Image (cartoon, rainbow, N blue to C red; front, side):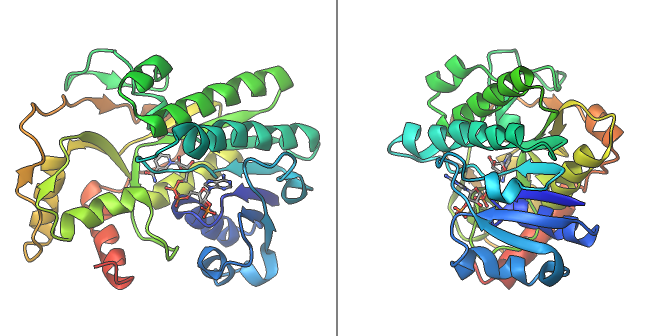
Length: 317
Ligand code: NDP
């Protein structure tokens, strides 16, 4: 029971490592700097870490960087990829680490005969960004793909990075005969194990921390523990194949703010939208395929509460 997790210090990966250790796996985990306690201390303190967690240095952009961490592994979970929205040089900061990183990891997998399945942390970003019509009746599912030309038009470079990375992964896996599964979560929230604030939890921090306005955006949301669990099931269940969307609920930020206000009437959640444009239309994301994995989605209200309590406990506000 030996598996590799890339980008182990991150929000989602930390939960993945925790649950893998709980299930008795030996985890060979990569971080960019094993000597940086901000990236490793919380991992080394996990139950089972002393006995079954090994840390390796690896960078998405260094060829062969993942070979050592993958040695002897039956499963590989590739989560390492930059997640932020503002960037001066999107090619270097977002697209290269996402696409070249994915190909670099898959190249190591194809050289390592022990590897039986690779689970890639893709995103709903690689599913929904296209010109397909959107109304509250539209149900997005795993047959949808984002359109790179559309991502470029709207200049959403993070979304482009995830779309291109998943496309490249499927092409490479097909060519080399790799058993690849992708997990495609929406905005992931929930308790933070890592000390650094990540982008999706920062969106919630903004709303409880005195920001005067909320974003005019409609997004799907899902709990980090469900996302980590889905990764493990995607590895363990033999019949699994293809992509799995993970969205508990799609809401506009105005609805998110209402939910937060009901949970925390004492916090100054913003009352006003950042602009006066019409709200983007709602849509649904199918839960059918992911439910066949055995994932039960945590309700958004619970995920919001867990996020805020964790942000408070870690003194982010
Ligand atoms: P974090 O920012 O918490 O973690 C990102 C991880 O990627 C970090 O461990 C980071 O390492 C690593 N990383 C970034 N660039 C490189 C690089 N060049 N080489 C090696 N490692 C690198 O984000 P999340 O946990 O939120 O995201 C993890 C994955 O999940 C990403 O693939 C993201 O696209 C995907 N995802 C996230 C969603 C969300 O809402 N959070 C939704 C859908 C998908 P370091 O600590 O050294 O910077």
